[in-house]
Amino acid sequence: MSVALPIVLTISSMMLATSAAWLDTSTANMRRAANMHDYLQAFHAADGALKLCTRALRAGVAPSMPPVDREPAEWKRASAFDGPFAFTPRPQWPGSARAPRCLIEAWKLVSRPQAEAYLLTARGFGASPATQVWLQFEIVFHEGAMTEARWRRIVASPS
Image (cartoon, rainbow, N blue to C red; front, side, top):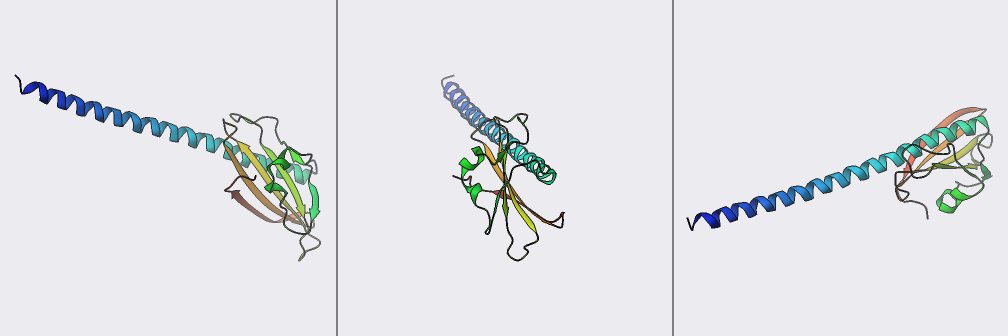
């Protein structure tokens, strides 16, 4: 009888330690899933904003910055998204803390002076305002038709 009590206590403590490890793992997985959901929400908001801003640009209803001779860099300033050239394609986005915003910058292509080039940058938000995704779309129009389009994700948020 005296030998059974230490064995039962040892087995109970091992089961408690295993349960605690499972709880920690489950909690970490839930946080990871929530963060991924928040990131995907921000990504879809930015992607949708890019599409809506492209349509608005083609329709001539979106504001764009004056053309520059080099690749535009105004998007690197986060404050530009609160300025007069920032465009909100929708007043709100489902599940996002803030509405996505676009910045459309025009630039002159030295090699093709007849072409119109634009850099569209969109910022999308997740359920938390801290979760942001920045996407860009480069578009070149020649004689009214879109001749080039390139998409990219910005890894580091502009400052």
